Image (cartoon, rainbow, N blue to C red; front, top):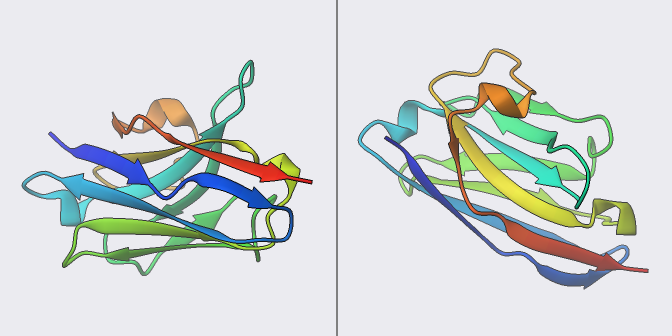
Length: 124
């Protein structure tokens, strides 16, 4: 069992930055792939970024590539999402997710463990 808790959301102006954190707990969480998804009301949950257990593999949605960076600190069991050059289109609830391994799994249904989400609002 893996438990994840997101933090770091908030209100920011367009062009600004935020860093989200995801604290994970569980016996083997450092061996899990971690991901970030986001969801607007009335829309499907969409993939944002993922990172393999060692940090050597990362993947990004085209819409955030070159603006967002995912990283992890296995000593702290924490995953980060650094978000730069934010736009109003980035406004959503951001969710952290975990799964035993990453094989290009960008569908939300493929991820086993989820946090409750943190709201990110970008004003124009």
